[in-house]
Amino acid sequence: MAVVQVGKLLDSYLAEVASDANLKPAKFCELALSLPNHARIYDDGVYRAFKLDVLRIEDGAIAEITTFSSALFPHFGLPETLGA
Image (spheres, rainbow, N blue to C red):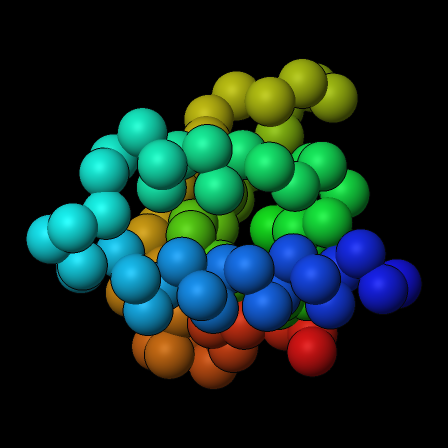
């Protein structure tokens, strides 16, 4: 996993230098794209809720779908995240 550690280091560096007025956008992009895709972890292992679908079944088929936004999860006693 050394390549992932290098990815974290490079991303930290990029976060620091991103606001540097002397850094040309092309150079920034070149640095950002210099790592292979597997060097970056794109998720933090946390599953975030974004909606809840409630299905109404009639005769073995879905007759209606009612969608609730995650903003209502506390009213249902549901957590907004799972994992990590």
